[in-house]
Length: 233
Image (cartoon, rainbow, N blue to C red; front, side, top):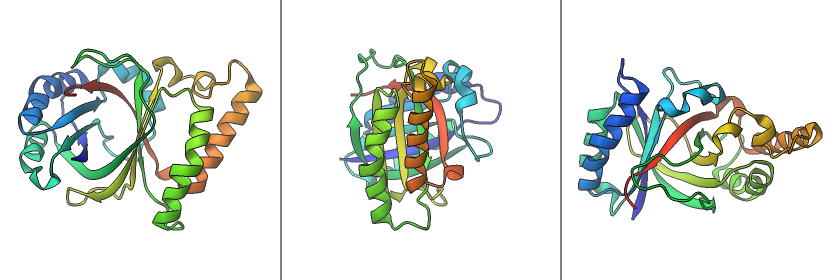
């Protein structure tokens, strides 16, 4: 089995609510019928509008979500890509290797109900100053401990890009899914587990920023607050 991730953009004039409804009611069943397993939808729907101030992006327009699933063989993705294309104005696909440093601690909502909290989706580019081997070492080994110690995450999924699946896809080499309580996304005191202490906030924030700078150019990072829907186990 192989994991495929598709960044998606909604059609012009389509509302976040309509994006959610069509993705769940129309796109998801089509993907399952065509072989998708462990289907997950991350969507910039109406439920995350209050967290939009936390979005970091250089994309115009910003992405509107990600569709991810497992397929027996990525060579057979054509019919699934056609379904995604029929519901979006743009999609960029990647074959990835998934690792889960922090398994999800939330109770599973009945599919396709919205999962609690907000998932911050980060798209990462490798700086030219680092070899791929060194970049992965710093990201997978050095940064993991800092991220888990300084943030109030309940989920941490790393998707290391093997290669792009769509022509002209942005040169992302990592796609990260981090789950946060909704209130933490706009409250640094909660996000960085500071417990009301300004000193601890500065320490944890400083550690996190320093660690990120060791393997990223921060101005190139894409970070988007999204709702999560698990459609097929």
